Image 1 (cartoon, rainbow, N blue to C red):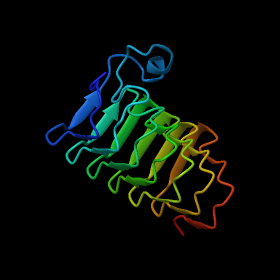
Image 2: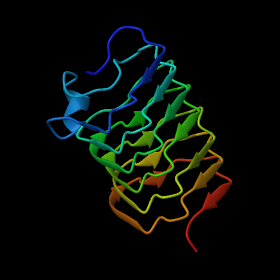
Image 3: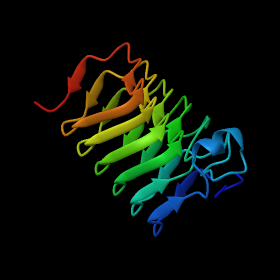
Image 4: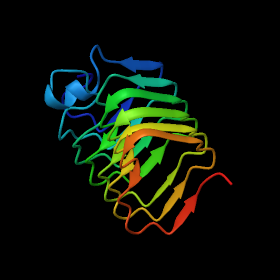
Length: 167
């Protein structure tokens, strides 16, 4: 676990990569594996302005306080679980350079999220990648080319009104 205690915001100004030792799905079942925030932390915002890749980790799962995540340089999420999951107040996600996702429950179970724009995302694989977003009304994936080896990759978005996909 990277952070314990009660920070209200986490900023990793120079961190470019976060990588755990095992497959990230192990961290769901074994909480001593790589995690960013302690479950039920007091983090309101997360900002990693130089982070390029997340591999083999649980980034954020079951956090009651988080409202925003800013990962402006993130390009790859690989073999991770719960990158942003089970966070009832998370309403702002910024990952404008994200290109590839191969993970489990990447952006899921976020009841406050109403809009998601991933302008550079080209490839998605894994299970529950973008799903269980009950208030999501706009999803923008203009460069998505490949959805592979997946179960519920883009699903369970009951209020979705606008979907932007490549032509």
